Every structure is written in C-alpha cells, then in structure tokens.
Amino acid sequence: MQLSVVVPCYNEEESVPMLVDRLVQAIEPWADEAEIILADDGSSDETWAAIEAAHRRYPVVRGIRLSANRGHQVALTAGLEAAKGERIFMLDADLQDPPEILPDMMMMMDRGYDVVYGRRAERQGETLFKKATAYLFYRFLNTLSDVEIPKDTGDFRLVSRRSLDAVLAMPERARFIRGMFAWAGFKQIGLEYVRDPRVAGVTKYPFRAMLRFATDALTGFSTKPLKMATRLAFLSLYVTFLMAVYVFLSLVLHNTAPGWASMLLAISFFSGIQLLTLGIMGEYIGRLYMESKQRPMYFVAEETGASDGPAVPQNLREPLRREAS
Ligand code: UDP
Ligand code: MG
Image 1 (cartoon, rainbow, N blue to C red):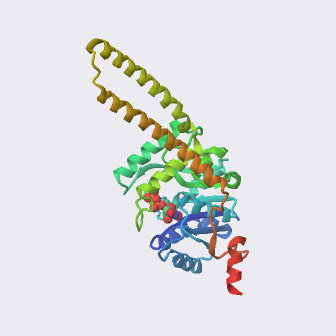
Image 2 (tube, protein in one colour):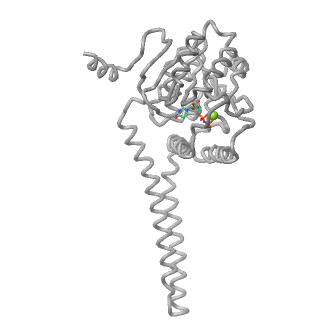
Image 3 (cartoon, protein in one colour):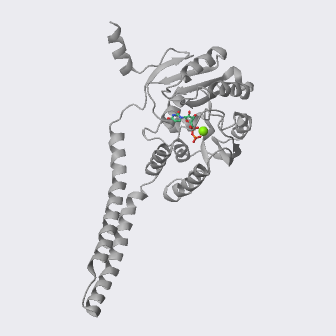
C-alpha cells in the first residue's frame, strides 16, 4: 500500500460526499495502491451512513466508527493506527484543506522529506477571533515549548511511514499531533496553501474545545508553566519588599497607616498568585492522573471495508458475546 488518506469526521454528514469526491480525484495517480480512511468520531448525525455510502460507491474508502466522541486528535489517531500506507496524508473533513495539494506534497517527499506540512498562508471564511487566537496561540506555544512547533500549521500534512510509526509509539493520551510530529524529528518542510472556508456544517471547535486543545498542547510540550510558579514567588517577594518599605515610611512620616487599601491589595495579589500556581499544578497533576490510568484512547464500534476483519478490541467484544448467549 503506497498511500493512506486519514480523515477524522465528527457530524460531517454534509461534507463527507463532497470530501470523498474530491479525494478520489486527488489520489487518482496512486489509486491502485491507496486507501481512504474516514474515522467517525461518534457522530450524532448521519455521518456513518454517509461513510458507508461512500464505501459502496468507492471501494477505496474504509470507515471506522468510534464508540463515542473522543475529540479530533483521538479520532485522527484511530485513523492513523488503522492506516497501512507507506505515506500517510491527513486532512480535515470540511475541505478547509485542499486535497489537490497532494501531488506537490508527494513531490517534496520524493526529495527526501519525511513530513510535508501545510502552512496556512491565508485563512478564508474564519472569524477574526479565530484567526487572532490561532495567531497568538502558536507564538505563545513556541516561546514556552521546548520543541519548535511550526507556526500556522494544522494536522494537514503528508508523512512517511517511519515518522508516523514514531508518533504512534508515543503513548500519551492527551494528544497534540502536530507537536508530536515536530518532536519526533526527521526532515520536515512546510508548503504554503490558502485555507478555504468550510464546505458545509459548522465548526466543531467551540471556544471551550479550543481552550482544552491549547492546554493539551502547552502542558504536553512544556513544563515551563510549572516553573512559572517559582518566578511568580520571586515577583511576589519583590512586591512585598516594596510594600514593606512603603508601610514603614508611612508609619514614620504620618504616624498612621491607612491600612485597608494596602491590605486589600496584598491579599488579592497574593491569593491571585497562589490560585494561579495551584491551577497550573492542578493542570499537570490532572494530566498525570489521566495518563496513569492507561485507558485505551478509543474503542472501535463498527468498521466498513476492512480487509482483514473487524478490529474490535477484545474488551468490547467480550460483553457483546455475553449479550448474544
Ligand atoms: N472533529 C472530530 N471530533 C471532534 C471535533 C472535530 O473528529 O470532536 C473533526 C472535524 O470533523 C473536522 C476536524 O476535526 O474534520 C476539524 O474540525 P473543525 O473543522 O470543526 O475545526 P476548525 O477547522 O473549525 O478549527
Ligand atoms: Mg475546519
């Protein structure tokens, strides 16, 4: 198998038919040795039916349906784990990333690159808020994180088998896939493209999901926020010292200290810092806890077009069999 295409789909019933049409066109030169894997992330609409229909229409299409909604990065991971190709192309279901760029990416890979990622030159049809937060996020992340994560990139990319295997060997559950590829190393290069608006449906990343994604990225690739607590402590010591000078002077000069203002200031300042520090520690401890549980990231509920039978995990098959008997 030369090429695997992996697409996470969550409530994309409208996008799937268009997506598949354009993908089938784009992979034409490699069609004999290719597969398109659509990972349904526990959609609540007719996405799975759309995937099954796509499989009947084009046998290169395979579907995996997760047992519940696990989020973009896990759905993508499920697809990547199912992929058998020597090269793996991943993109979003909403066609914001043009599949037509594939031949260019293939050409770059022929020149010896292991990862060819799409770099967004322009984003169309996205809110100013989304663009601004994305812009700030990638810059902030890079000042904090220990690996250089390419700016303004998504998971839209073509990767080689060995770089994918490296990423799949990383066992963390909180996944930030573009960062994991950056960390894995190998030769990487960006290819500029214009990010189109969604073809259908609405974004599956409300502000809450964006925030979770950003904290996963930060805590997954940097321990600097933890160390920030030390710096904050020094800062607060310094401020305390200044306040002490002020209190002492006012005591000597006016004989009265107008107490409550500075008291209030001090209390709110230090409790703020303490809460912040606790919060940062909490983020890491929470993640340690989640990782230590070692839960499987996802379960496959259904598959279509799998060549070697359903890969339903053992722990899911067990209760099913009991139900039947
Ligand atoms: N997605 C997913 N599970 C989720 C949320 C999103 O599989 O819980 C998929 C979605 O179907 C799409 C991709 O992740 O293919 C990116 O989502 P979206 O286009 O909504 O994000 P945006 O482009 O607005 O950042
Ligand atoms: Mg999108």
